[in-house]
Figure 1 (cartoon, rainbow, N blue to C red):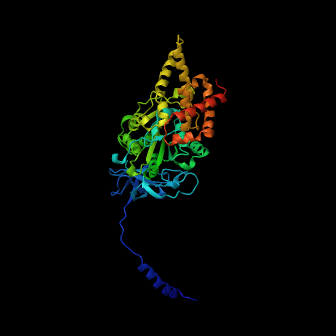
Figure 2: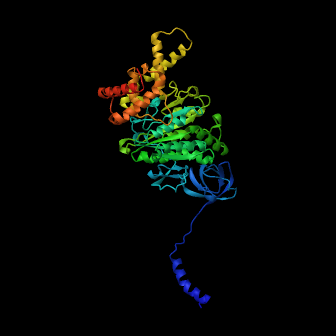
Length: 505
């Protein structure tokens, strides 16, 4: 039996050899401590070398973002703070907050730090990128000229979007803002645009409904969800838009096209105000801090169409903002309107009257406009907005019951067909060929002979005819072709067949 001394003698040479191969060097490590913690923020001392926006590591795997460096470090916590207490150690990570990017993220539901929320394993990242990235310089950008179709007829015809544009969806609560954004996601299913949906402060049930709608339509594989619901820590809600843009920039920088929807920036500004007040920053108008404009300006400036020498990719932004009683002159709405390239305003009165989507054409605008509109749609849609605006004024006039001449009566009847044409069900985006065919029918006066209630039935029949008898028309329009005489004649024939099928005149 081996004695203890014999065992030690046999073990000692091998242990000495292993120790000789270990490099032992002095290492300087700074360890701070928590002075105060609560409500999603922490104050930290003892880390004098900390830099702005540096990532700090707290006990329990909670990360924090150093945002204030005056004396004590003001830190936004990116996780739950229930188990943290004053006096606990804090370490500096020596780097900024990074999130995973890559094609493997598509079809996933993640939190702003890249952690999965869909019950699947963590995604395999091609690389990790900082959430705060500089916007492309002017020399790296190209003019916005390629269309991005939303599938919503009233937007594509009157307020067209281009790839690289920033278009604000704004309106009161429950007026259909998210519905338009979801239809825009569904309309990219068969195209070359990937979508990123960022939810900030939304109810979990609403977010779940959006994910299920995208999954049911077969668009999940081309959509990424970055979710920070209302019950998430404030730091994650604050970080979510920046994380979503970073994940989308991977596609833009690789020469592809991406669409980012942020739902919504009003709640993001409220979270920023909450954290700023807790960090004792000086309040300004409506108690928002002075950097609230810069908060969203530096975010939305990252949406751009890149020049050919940078790959030619694009990142289009559809931020959402909520108003109170239709007040566009409030602080956050005016900030966002001045930052973006146009806005689609939704009106609660129109929504409750049954006009959906409830777009207020008088207060909506696209500052890119026809330059990014498909040629086949541009010529037909050019007089549409003016005609519809005149109809709305005439309709108000005729409600008084005065004597109306035949010309005014015909204009009002035509306008009501336009309104029926622009009405659209949720989760039913319209392809470009169908929009063009409907506008051809409108321009030829075919719809004027039909009752208003027949317009939706005509649309459904016409969609089927285009798919079965004229698929080449859709292919030509998708390639950027103009509406020539031969194509117009073919569409007129399809419209005539559709009218006959629904029993029209």
